[in-house]
Length: 327
Image (cartoon, rainbow, N blue to C red; front, side, top):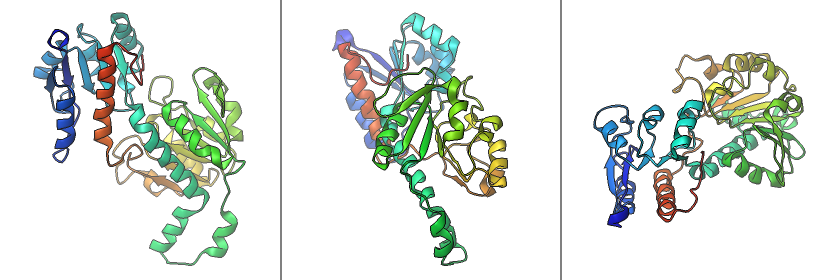
């Protein structure tokens, strides 16, 4: 191993009660050199920057611009599914030209995010938030008023914006419900169980959707992708879900649509900004349900992050293709 010893830079965050996960990383990279830093040390300055410049591999979330001036860096593995700061033309061009590979951890987050979305889709269809409000509020028995307002998902249309790992797993979870599923991505392609259309065709499908699931990443093309005009194309009674990034949705326009009662409900796991200030109008907008960016969370999250990296590290050592490659 000494002849192939790699220098690994990491700023993956380990809390005080995650010593086992930290030790898992240390054991897993045994035989290589490991330089560990705090999560706020992203390689832009100080000892962290010096170490990044001499590293072969970065694990965590290094500063994207800093990686452009690290000629030894052969592979960047992000501990998140999101890769916003790396999704820029100048970053991609520089790293690709140099041969630096970038991977993310979408394999860690596809299952929890898909289950989180399924839970909200089902709960809104079956009126669970309304019943919970009644229990915690007036403790009123609202059977007669609620039963006619409940829905079956069978035959309804769900439009998924973005078709990455999370969307593909969500499709698998929705299939038993016999929904009509359409997915939107940059390039049209084929899939056995879902119709996939190009982003340029999204306006044609918005009026058909009972559910719009936004899993878009944040970049120059997706900012305010669900803008006022597109929200206005939705049918009355449609439901909007956002588990991608807050900047991809025009929140002011969403508030207007919800307040007018034209959009039936919205579920947001991501917002702009985060954390959402207590005085923000989204908190009190009718039929707007918010969770604090927990869609990808689960009890063994950090352990799975580390194991995913170590799995890819073994592949890197063998020269095998890396999992969850972005570019």
